[in-house]
Length: 401
Image (cartoon, rainbow, N blue to C red; front, side, top):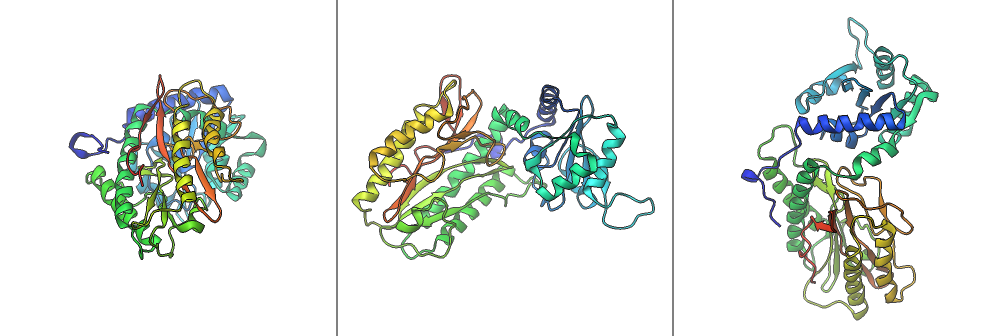
């Protein structure tokens, strides 16, 4: 799969895109009764400002008052990094040393102080409860007043659901990277090779391809690439998330390649394929696992279109899997919304009433896992269109083993 951009360079979102997202966020705040927003999750910071790639160990808060300008409340260690990586200003900082004019020494003190300055009468402060640790959340709630803190995770799910054109451009870049990762993984698979060596080949190939797409960008590292899970043999493929460890592959092993939540610039996609090690063919029962896993994905994909409930897509996959006659061969959902993060808040699973809309991006990845036999899944990432879906990952790559 080729990623077509001018000069082979990835086009990152512009400030115009972030301004539009901020405008949509302010509209959502009105709908949800939020006077001022204070968020710290890395995905929402990237979505609203383009801040990406910081090794965050201290909370960085983005504050957005209704009708006002966004600004960061940052630890002193990250002020220069924020200024280098995005156009949103740092409006307050906290430090871990003494200064002539005393500054707050903790993130929650700095956040509460800034909120008092810009929104002293705010009745409701929207906080992404899932964006920080439970301990930090409690510190913030006590600092701003627990009665004023409201979780905006549902609002964030709404904002993330439908991707804009700029996001889809980067997501396509992620699919290009994932193709390079899979090709390198498949080339490394052979009897006697350890799983971790396959995962390392994936990491190296993805890093190189991502560096090419960043085209010399001095602020974006190509090293953050997500998961490189590799499992081999009957026992480890019967678990859905083998970690690419020390097991050496054997002749005739099926190797499950899982490149879940992998992507460029934090825009993540999923891609899964089983691969054969050596020339010995799988057992008849394992062949059935592989064939029905592939058919289950194709049945699920056939249901993807606007207006369909996500639960119906899952049911289509299960109708195929149930033909295998196995007891409890499923370990995970059929898919999830993805693109702005590893999971954007919606699921393709039993009973899901999420209704698909154009612009939504999902993985479709039903799997079959049979103890004593092994497991397999075919996973791809799609965007819902006006009439159905568009395949974003390289669908034909690795479908035949």
